[in-house]
Amino acid sequence: MKKILMLSASPRKGGNSDLLCDAFAQGAREAGHEVEKVYVQDQKIGGCMACYGCRGTGVCVQKDDMATILDKLAAADVIVLATPVYFYAMDGQLKTLIDRTLPRYTEIRNKDFYFIATAAAGAKAMERTMDGLEGFTDCLPGAKVKAKIYGSGVYQKGEVKDTPAYKTAYEAGRKA
Image (cartoon, rainbow, N blue to C red; front, side, top):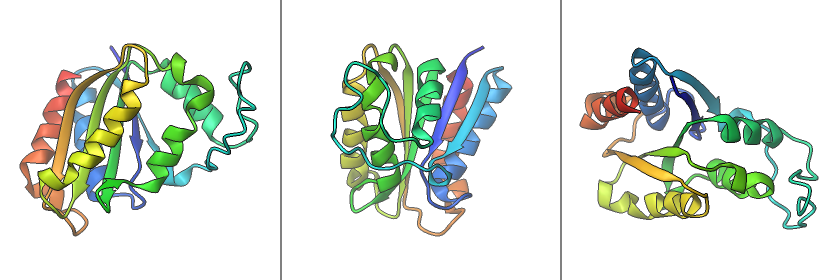
């Protein structure tokens, strides 16, 4: 059994990227894994202040929800990063969370990662988003990107259920 942490960065619960998280989670649970989904939007996470108060301590000077998320990231075996695509990039909520891993990013080691992105545009328009997510994992010791799931061509809430990405997310969860 693996511990899977899903960071759903959609600002709307039940949005397309969040629904792909649910499909992934269903597959993972059926395969016997433990799954936890964190709605990034519901967390209080301030932006990194680049003060380096965490240097040498591994503790951010800001007292918000990020400390708990860092514990979850360090403890997980598998991490799913899910975001809608805004202006060819991940949404601000996920980027802020990634920036705030600075105090303990070296502890997020030897993890398997799955990326989920959704956009009204086609998959090609989502490459910059995937590159940004991969830039994060390139900084993590031993990180392995196992799959990139493109929920392309979806705009209205729920449309992703009628796309091949929905089944792809479910199957990825089963194989996690």
